Every structure is written in structure tokens, then in C-alpha cells.
Image 1 (cartoon, rainbow, N blue to C red):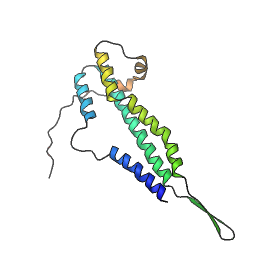
Image 2 (cartoon, one colour):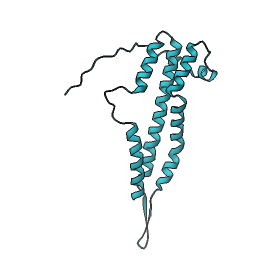
Image 3 (tube, one colour):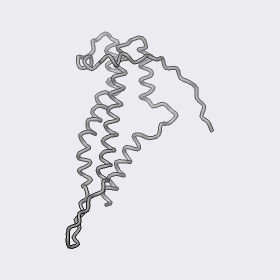
Image 4 (spheres, rainbow, N blue to C red):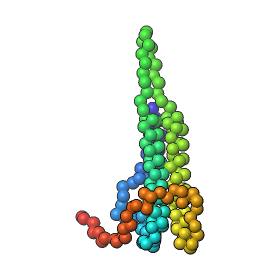
Length: 164
């Protein structure tokens, strides 16, 4: 009984710190993308690349979150009790290690997406594109019309004063 609680607590510690409540300060990745959007404001291909990377990063985070929630759910699932004649009771509890073993591939997929579509690679790709190099074939293949159809909105910061 203590093992599933410890494992779910450990997983909850890692996932809760990753998805903490949003603060009023901007995250470095948000300001980074806003800076790139302002820098390439009149370049629709660069905007589409930023949209693609943003979607893929969000997809990686959702895969990680989904695998964490699924692992916790499977690890804390209640077992089954079977009563056999003569007063014998067989209780089968799920093994929590199996839940995390099953969640590992989806967790790895999410981490791989976050690593592959990181902000560093986005900046290198846009810098190379701005220097006149052609886009890699794999990236050209992934750029669909839906990434070009999103409106390009110039970000203007609004001063906010917190209410006390």
C-alpha cells in the first residue's frame, strides 16, 4: 500500500513543479517567441516555422502530462477481490511498477518532441533561413497550410498593475 503512494507522490512532485501556477512574470520561452515574431514580422515562412515549433512543443508537453496522469491512475488503481467458497479471499493489487513501465514510451516520446523542437533549434533554423539558406527538406515537408493561415499579430505589451 505504501509503494503506490510513494511512487504517485514522487511523480506528482515532478509533474506539479513542471506545471506550476502561472506567475505574472513572463517565461523566457514566451518572450523568446515574441522576440522572434517581432523580428520576422513580415516573413510568413518564418512565422509558420514559429507556429510549427510552438505546436510541437505544446504537443510534447501534453504527451508528458498525459503519460504522468496515466501512470498515476494505473499505479493507484484499486485491486480486485475474489471470494472463493470456504472463506478464502484472493486479493490482487496492481503492480505500480508496471504502470510506470507502460508510461515510459509515451513519456520518452514527449521528451523527444521537446528536445527536437526546442527553442535553440528554432533560433538556429530561423537564423540560417534569414541568412539565405534553404529550409531542410524534413522541415519543408512539415510546413502545412494551417501554419501559414494563422494571423500574424504584432505583440504590444500592456502595462499591468496587480490588484491588492
